[in-house]
Image (tube, rainbow, N blue to C red):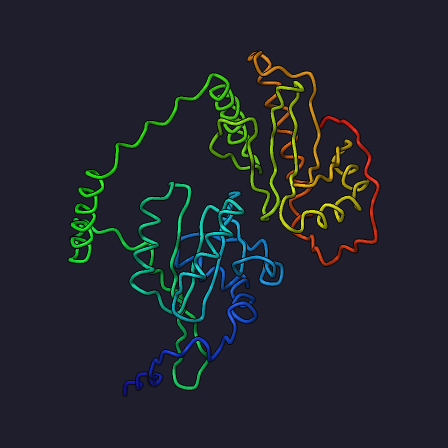
Length: 363
């Protein structure tokens, strides 16, 4: 007599659960859950990216976004922001501002539901942004079978899957296009032709050429200081991870010198400057050379200089640029974490710190 086949387990009913039944707060509940290794892996599988958490929810308390990550095996910053509700543009606008501040390579926007308008926004950004910049829209869902444990699921909703068919313009797009054409015709009749931009002077062209070589060298080194578009001015600015602070290189023709500067210029600049000045000895010891400290009316500046430079001697450019790269990286590595930790409330105006005026060079 043949044995009976083993009985199959009963099938339960799969039910979708409101995410707020498990996480009450995106910052206090969801973000700490997400930064756990197995959950980051789940998110990474949904978007096809391996992520490593650098700053968790507690460390991001004074920033926009919930988590700051690195793409595994690279130096690319990936910013994650989450909402346990349908998407809203104010939240995404804050993520964009933070992403620009840290020169992020990507932004992951997580929400319980994406509107059609916000999906169109993300797809438009991915179509027109530089290849090194990407945006992901991810919906978070919770599912439960009967009374058993819940399971989370990430669904990638943007970038949308590529279609082999050409997209069809909808009626609203056609209406908008015709309106714009009518407005263009009216404006072309009433407004003069825009003037051509004035050509750069020889001095401005020299600035562009010099800063271009600096940015090329930073990219070749894979520097922590991220290259920017070379300006036609006597200085070039780089982000250092916090609004109100800039890392700059300055070419002073009048004094025939180059300078590397940390500039503080927001409403709390004076307080932040004093808090840094209180750590002057430790900072300069870590950097290995002395700095100039200037508490000015408009802004505060901490800098070092390379004297006797002549931008007109192009044969000297490689030496100047090598000095700038090393100095900029030294400033970034020393000050990036420090400026993140500054809190103007910690400054007490009754305590002032004497600041020497020393000229120095980074080694």
